Length: 430
Image 1 (cartoon, rainbow, N blue to C red):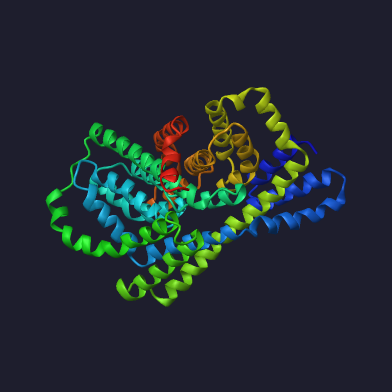
Image 2 (cartoon, rainbow, N blue to C red):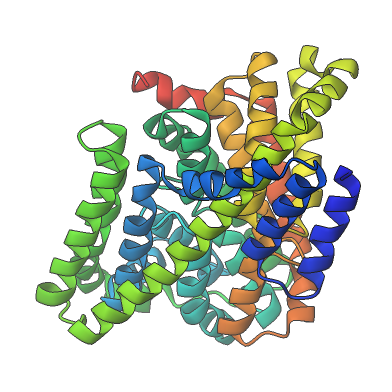
């Protein structure tokens, strides 16, 4: 069966509301059945469960649970208060708080969806009261959530590393500077918007008067990111162990320090973690089936031959621009984990042949997929932010494009300056 026909069938299933993992599995089944060799059907369960049976992926549920517990224990609120103390006393202060909050939360859960939910529920109404249009506040929240998968830990990086045998610790270290650059870019956009639209200046005295209690309250919340990032980057613990330690810390803080965590909420947090993790793993397993079929039909080799024929391997910069454009288009219509799982086995070997540093390309790939989280019509973070912020989806789709443009500009900067990604891993000897 031709690849174009399979692709059309896949998008037809998505358009009719078929769950993504079912659509991927059925597409793989049709492709294998189209070969006429029915003995190949045994590959489906092998690849499906094999795609999920990767040791390094055990870190994912821990990071998801740690992020959920941060929200339910009140630690997230304390991080946002700390962000307000740092940058909330200037014009458009809550916009900066939104971005800084995204940077700090990024060091806990590695999930843009979790950050979008946590930031949106608190900051969108607050930003509207400060004078921001609700649609802009929602767009900035969606943009800030993109920092989550770039600054370590990162669920996308774990998936990428598990598929390419790249060091997870090295990828995490490589994401630090790009994540900060992305945050700075959103701050500059907020500064421009706040000045042009004359957003009122916050009451600096009122904020500073609360400095001491905010600092005291924030200490417990700030420890969690240091446990995760510090442990992994220094090599003291593995990513999975770091996630488990973060969960343990959040449990202790929630039960004995903030005392906002109950056994009922813990059960709900575990259920939510299982639901999110199951969705990720089902999509990964199903995408692995399709990926195997593409290799079997030599689609990857044909694509590589096309790239070679275009002379892109001799021009790594242009190669990454071309691959980024492909990911951007596909990411507009497909779930991000599926995009990452399907395209990594095709694109990563090309980057290696072109002599691109594996950490550099890993961050470029991760940021590409992350940007898809806010690109209409499928971008998941848009729907989350619209729901928690009570913003009409159409208004958000109109407001989101400047933030997409900023993120794409940062992507271009990272592609052009590999030092942003490889410097920190080299300094740490990774």
